[in-house]
Image 1 (cartoon, rainbow, N blue to C red):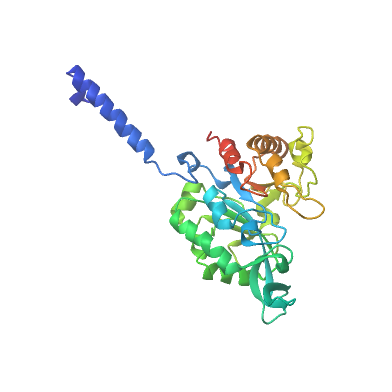
Image 2: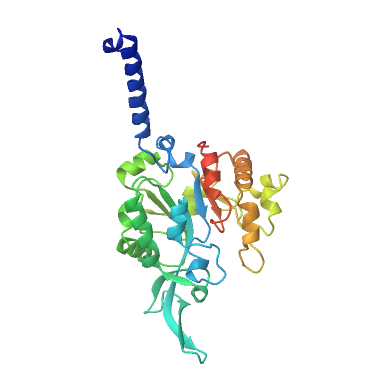
Length: 320
């Protein structure tokens, strides 16, 4: 205690209370990384990110056979910090069955001179969003939330240079991480550098240096085809559900695919209500850590609006 607080009991008490108040204010003012000061000193591979599978495929946008109920911008508001997205070439079209023209997007390839880039799942005819339009809200979110770190895993059917041009046009480029694909900084350092988005693709990424081939050296994963909820919730099945799939055994980041794939390709809310509970996600993530030697970096679910993948990630990060 300082010499200014030695003599009078009331003065000592006041000084002590003032010191505690100052310490509390200083603690409250500590900068957070992805919602907590405790995460700032951790490297990316030591942080669990709540994620969305086929994040762009949204019922709220009118997509057919959607995997998510809400759009990517709303997923961000809920706390999603990793997104698995699909990118295709498409061309605008329309058809008329007698009730007037109906606009849609037809899937195409790189040989079509009128091709444009779209977020689509398998077929753009089932639902699409122009890629730049889909990325702009991400850039806007990052601008308004300067202490958030994100990651993308792209199922990419377009030229890397075309994707890079779209990311630049959307205002996302300045936020993209441009360091090593195998040794990641702490979240605090990523935030200080401004490079807060790790961008990976399942396909080739050359010559774009900041676009990493996900399963070449950066990312390992679990299987992603689970036909029933018991495969992700039954304790007897958890170790097998965490077995190695794509990616190197020593990949620094780890994707836990945690969603049900029915034979008809439909994502059922009833399935998500079972596998997306905090308890189910935490139990499987711990099983995967035991089986694979590290906690998942990304937990990817369908229907992020159902269950509590965000709360599960918070628990796994030791934040409550």
